[in-house]
Image 1 (cartoon, rainbow, N blue to C red):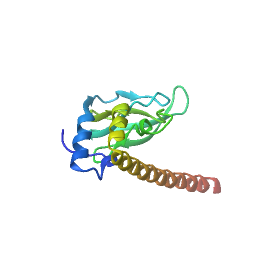
Image 2 (image 1 turned 45 degrees about the vertical axis):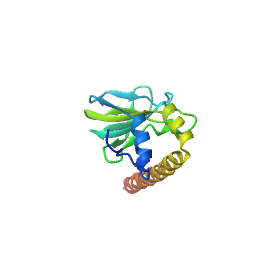
Image 3 (image 1 turned 135 degrees about the vertical axis):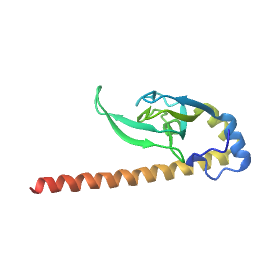
Image 4 (image 1 turned 30 degrees about the horizontal axis):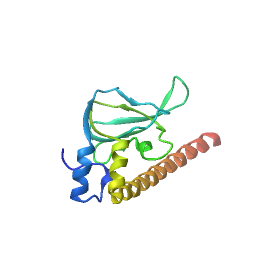
Length: 154
């Protein structure tokens, strides 16, 4: 397997990349295949190598709202597997035929105990990801409120 393409691992040394590669499994998923559901125990971290994955949130038992579509060159999800209480906060399903890398939380955590710097790099990159996603969400909320206010003025 080549160098990881996931933003969570930017800043790793060559040796750390080699250790990480040993933890990864590559899987192929078909369009529409469900990877996990919101509320399930988060056991895996995923990176998009090819294709696209859709992230969704449940509105009720029968309706899911699309939140994001993640693509290669940085797309990662299942980060709830890195943070207690280890429960997926969104659902994930393949948006198109895709190739993903998967890491078991337990194995990744064991590796970060051996090499705490790996854990620090991952958590620093995770914080950046969360801040970027928060900024995007804030912008979307602003757009929705502006649209709502324009409609209410008429």
